[in-house]
Image 1 (cartoon, helix red, strand yellow):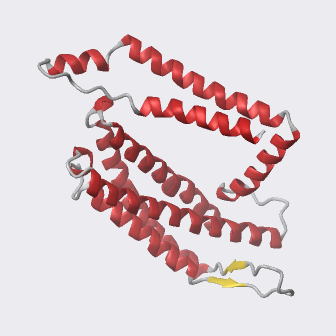
Image 2: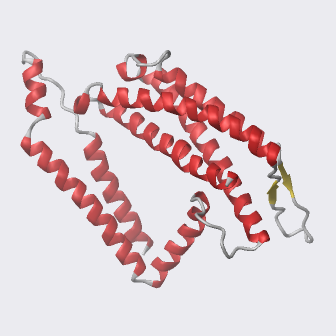
Image 3: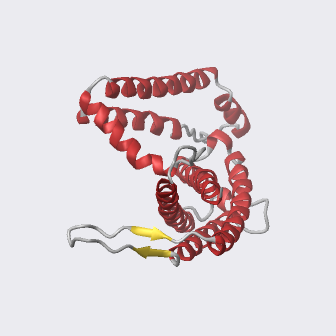
Length: 257
């Protein structure tokens, strides 16, 4: 079962790599505008991309059906869901005891910490990579806002680290009865915690809005003729932005609610 899972993931990865690699250089001694138009609006290219997207979705659906049809696959799904569900907000607390609500809030705060750290490190690495390997890429030099895309990445990464540091000030390790037990991390959530960290999250969200504007502008530069290396950076940034502004934002709303 694990071999089938790895094979499906590898196959989908190859399909995604083909989509990202959809870059066509302009031949020498050729009308650049005419060459771009022929490739950009090619019917064969459009149909191929649509079919490949359908194949990717079909592979994911088939993989889910295969996993659910076996005991090992069900265990894999259950284990994965138990790890991932703490990153999803809770719609209602009806029927939950006070202890369950506290445990739920504690797990969401810890998930928020890991999420912000992961996104901050990702943006810092991508910003350094863009400066080092893509110094002339217009996607990271030109910007519709007051500063460049790379500078906003550094600011967003720094704001995430500051938010995590502020949350960790309210974290403590609980005592354990046995030396074999791992001490649990508890978060003291009170009005001052919500007010101060909510303000930090608000400023981080404002930086996120500026980043979304720059990200949309960067995607429009070059269109489908954007080099693969730049596309990979923009895709990673898009995923990181969704995690920090959408997922982390929903978690923060759950904590405050």
